[in-house]
Image (cartoon, rainbow, N blue to C red):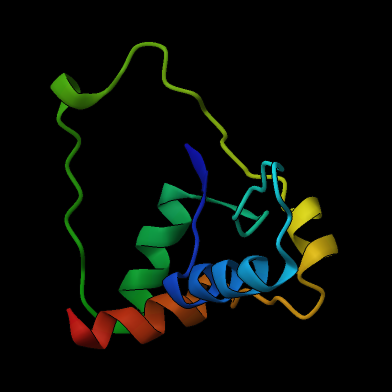
Length: 100
């Protein structure tokens, strides 16, 4: 599965920028616009922590009709909040993992 992961710092920055831009009545996707496989995320966590991570899938929680790839289109957000940036996922994980 591939997912679009968002850094909370980037989300807050996007919300702040949207409050200033005041795009009344518009729907705005707040997303990174980049997908990563769950395997990539697990591998990054292993590399960052130096720990082996045992991942087990519980079939009871796997949906038969699971969407394989989900990615947000942030073009409208970027047009409204010109200086908005989102860090690479590896940077986000490096920031998060020491706190876990």
